[in-house]
Amino acid sequence: MKLIIRTFLLIILTSQLVNAQKTLPTLKTNKTSISIQEGNSEYKDVWEISPEVKLDVFVANPFRGTQTIVFRSDIDSISFTVKPNKKYDFIILLNGKDKAYTQISTYSKAKPSLEPKLFYTRLKKANTQTDTIPFTLGKDNWIHLKGKINNSDTVDFLFDTGAGICVITSSIINKKVNLTIDGSEENGGTDGIATVDKSAKNVIEISNLKWENVPLLSINYQKPTFDAVMGWVAFENKIIEIDYEKHILVVHQFLPNLSAEYTKLPYQLIGGVPYIKCKLVVNKKEVEGWFDFDSGSNGELIIGQKFARDNALNDAMKNIGTSISVGSTGKAIKNNKVILPKLKLGDYEMYQVPLAIQEQEVEGDEHNENIGNNILKRFNTIIDFKAGFIYLKPNNLFYTPIIRN
Image (cartoon, rainbow, N blue to C red; front, side, top):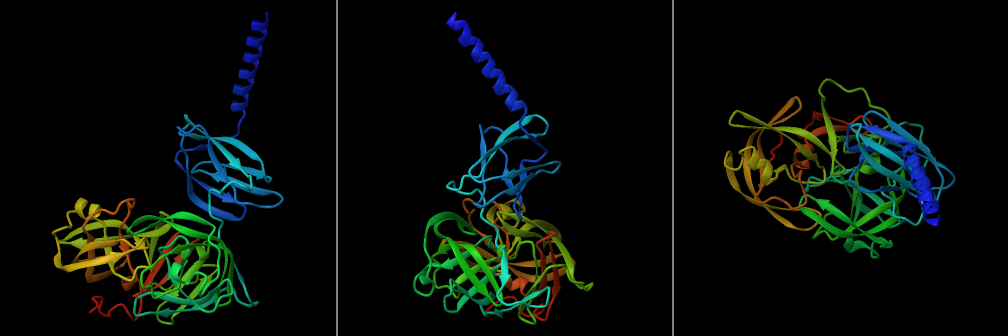
């Protein structure tokens, strides 16, 4: 008799579990990448669903009171008003058949799944909708900004559109800038992936702007000409104008009126940084690919060995020697340097452009094509981080020699 009762109870509990699973809220999708809105912060295509995993847990950043978290797919959305130290379960249904069981966790002691977005405030009130930051274009082809970290003396920032986070040079920590190392993180560069130290909450001031709760990676750059790196994420959801003639960086809230001289290029985020399409023309053959739009690279063009091999580019151009490139991990990459006959960027063409072809594939980097600031500086640029477009207009550097002595 006891056995029958236990079996009956088991049937009831199983039935309840099945019914609970059936009543879970469901988000429909035809793509594996899901966008997330956490409070006022938007994260596009950051959540990769995995139906094969028993339970995918998204951990929210700490907050007080209540907060809205929205998961958005290509065809649907689901919204939760959440409270601290709670769990919220739902299902993501892929292609109408594959279920990915997902949970939102708001437990404050768990490591958040996403970095908090960066927002700036003005140090002084200004009667304008734009913010202007002066910069110096160095002989190293980099954009240099002057600012402070944690109320330090003046710090030299490199403005890097190819960086999805902010960085401090290891050698100045607790010498020029005081901060606390309280974690570590994997950092990916053009030369591979490395684990580096991290400081979670810092304050950056540049011109009239102030960012709080800024995470900084500590990278041991060799003989750097800068103290820190300001990644593009500091201006997310803004519109950035880089004027290489006036030497100013202007932050717009809305897209300004543009002349017909600007060419419009869509970009996509790959590995957290913007990539644009470039066309390489060799022997009347046109090759197209996505290139990292990288003001943090002081070179011209780089392509990975796989890209070169797939497009038969290894022996297709005039060789002018070899070069060594070094990314944020400090690894030296040997390149064969050639002359590209023609480069197309939107409506514009450039001729006899130096191109570096990596001799070997870089481990952990599938997209290793890069367009550096020795080319980008020749265009006044507007980057619309709201709509996902980059606008280029040739400036007074356009016809200056590209090849450096």
